[in-house]
Length: 222
View 1 (cartoon, rainbow, N blue to C red):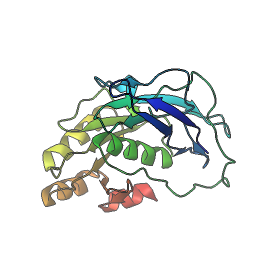
View 2 (cartoon, rainbow, N blue to C red; view 1 turned 90 degrees about the vertical axis):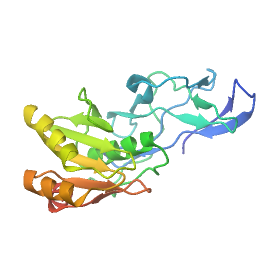
View 3 (tube, helix red, strand yellow; view 1 turned 180 degrees about the vertical axis):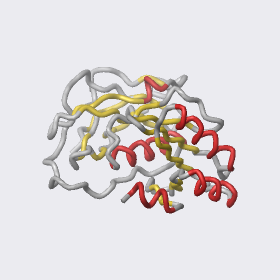
View 4 (cartoon, helix red, strand yellow; view 1 turned 120 degrees about the vertical axis):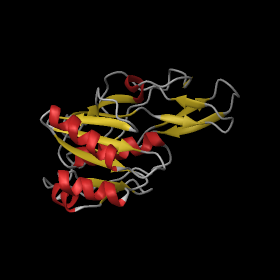
């Protein structure tokens, strides 16, 4: 079970009891970032990729993986970044059987959650070195892993053919396969273009579970 710490908002002085969310390790065991109760939480005034993620080592299999940095939204409107203990090992239960466990989604409430859901899904598929890509796509966020490039579009605009083509071209230059995740789905033209180029398409539902849209996505999942 994740540890709970007392967090006081430095803006309105409200006190909160916070527990970090657990995420599934590739071995099947739930992992939660170890919280540091001695360091005060800090308001989030700007965002950068390095501060959005924290490396946590699974106690069951000793695998280091990047997970979202814990945050708490105070009723006063302040978003607090919860301090994580240095290089301590996270609390982790016994691992599951040595087969791929069921995917455990994270509920999507923000654009950041959509990126997290896609990253978790790619790790579930076996791409354990998922990270933010240097590529800046026309919309959304690009993720990369060895031999793979993914685009996560958390906007409310359905992806269009140009979006699919830009991702495919970028992946071609990297000699990588590509995957597209969209929160709002795809136009018919975008789906047709993806089928032609062999790009797997997924729709992110609000539960955080990517749903295959075309045969290429079904094949990737299988």
